[in-house]
Length: 129
Image 1 (cartoon, rainbow, N blue to C red):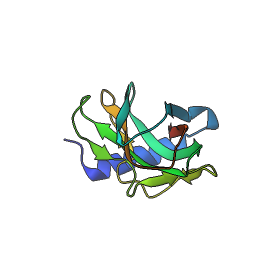
Image 2 (cartoon, helix red, strand yellow):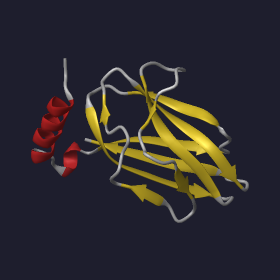
Image 3 (cartoon, rainbow, N blue to C red):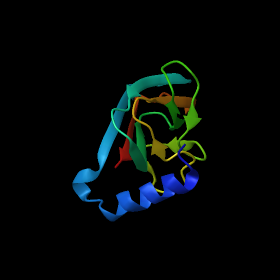
Image 4 (cartoon, one colour):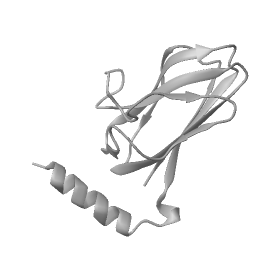
């Protein structure tokens, strides 16, 4: 059984060997976003979240979070401790994650909780290492 201490030790060892080339993105470009869960992506390796970046074109804003799910279509755990409000200026979160250790074989899904104005698209990048 993996304990919280084991996960923390794994993260410390991983961070000690991190190089820029080790950072990989999961990207979503969602046209005409509406309140829904979209863009489920498979996680092909164990990884650690290092950042989330989001921005919009058109409209005012798009409020969202990214969930880690055991399987597609089943509610999961929010990665961010609070939803991010993306707008044309962009928003970046690089700390204070609710769930930053992602498991191979799980899924990621974007959960859009609000859209203000006629947003043409929202772009999201989840950085992992």
